[in-house]
Image 1 (cartoon, one colour):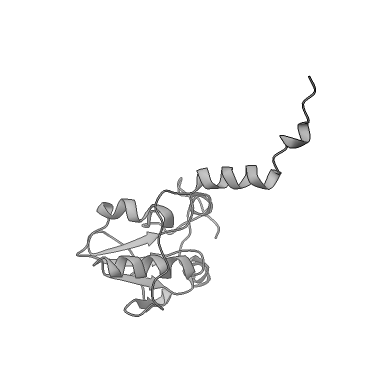
Image 2 (tube, one colour):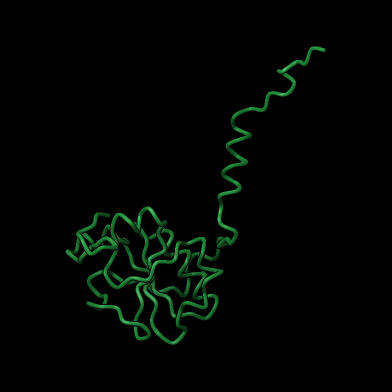
Length: 146
């Protein structure tokens, strides 16, 4: 019996789409308004250190970005995990949200603001942080990169 393998052929793009779908985080932050209500902060106006509960620097970049370098006192929760990890954030302290450039942190700050958290978006993200001469370290304390 002859089987026509062309009928069983599945395009590579279908396999890739299935793999990507499986790896996506289960939580999703939906697009919101244009940012009304979310305060913007320049890196130069941020506290010199972040000690919860008074002030928390929330880094919402992905794991690989975090491993290359991050702010010393930052709390790392990737953007896709924020909705499921809200219990790790303090509603009473100031939350400064940072990412690489400022786009993802803006969306997370909007989400947090809508859910009753005092969130501030850090304009320019980690690029502005490093450009301002603020420290960037790896998990083992060595100098990191952005």
